[in-house]
Length: 472
Image 1 (cartoon, rainbow, N blue to C red):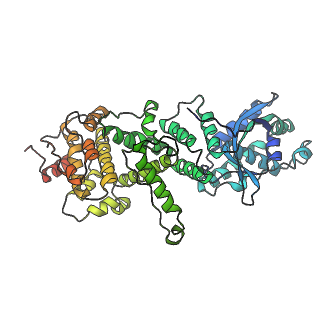
Image 2: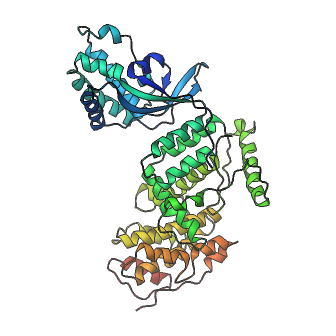
Image 3: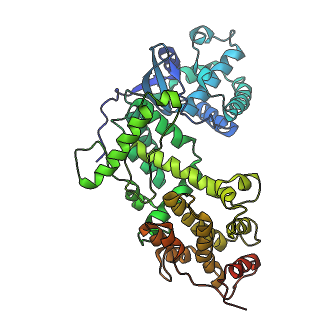
């Protein structure tokens, strides 16, 4: 059940004039994304204002704010939702003042209204560029504004103003507002759930969690869940993992370490959690600068709240490293795994190099097989580190790419069957149950004797070198 929100002030309706007259302490917090609105968005907003100027009131949406303390302990209002729109409105306000409507009848009424919001915008280059481009466009448009349009903008354009004292509740409210009428991605639902689980966390920890999440590319984040985390966690248990849907999100909901339940199985997680906390908060860390990450395992029970966000960030970094091996170049050569296996006696370096360059690597079926290989590598590295990873790469290559050689069409269903072990032993199950790397490396595999498609000569050559080619 969602926890009730208890720190929300009664929503108000503010005109644009009231927004800036009554709230000079508006700020855009560091965790917010860059200013992304384009000239098209600006044009659309201004067109809407002009087209609706004959109505008594025009709503510009909802603004969600978190009451906070500033540098001098003065109250400030951090914008949680509505940043893009309020920033654009500030640009309109500035453009009207620069236009200097001294000759206008409305000048005296609005000349004292100003916005400090633009001062708090991040120096991110995207923000600065979009601000400049949009401001030029706005200046061109407001030159033609009549007194009536200016009055309508200040007095009749209004927003729903929601102030919330608790930061986790502010984000919860933001997510609930943005989910209305939208088909949210599963990872968005998980973000909302785990924010609700952070009511016992400090404001700093909550903001850091949101910041780390928002800094990730949201498309890449969706791929992280669908193509890697979901598949490994399911395949390792013999469960299908074609698509990560909203019906599967419970896979990433787990235990709360602050709950009253004192089940035996929770104790190891509590011990790891509080030991890590104690180590990182010890005064000696201010001297030696060391930091200990929570010892995550990919197939562990998820810890709700802050540890979930750390879990996602941790595995995002691992996958980013593996993706660096997808193309030859500087990132490939600097990759930790590549450097570890280069110059060794195994064929691991040749395998990684071949997978990054062979002609058929970008076909749909080949990309599916590469995903299986990457998931194996991720799961193994997570459990055993770099211990004998060169031999593990050989093993994963043979197991995954045999599927490419023996089938003319590799589909999503094909790799799903491979992952759960429908036709041969699942490497994911082997890794999950292994207590030693040798249990993984000694797994018997089938060879291949034919290549059903073109542009696989380099793959066949590697199969021959590894003695897994049964053809002529």
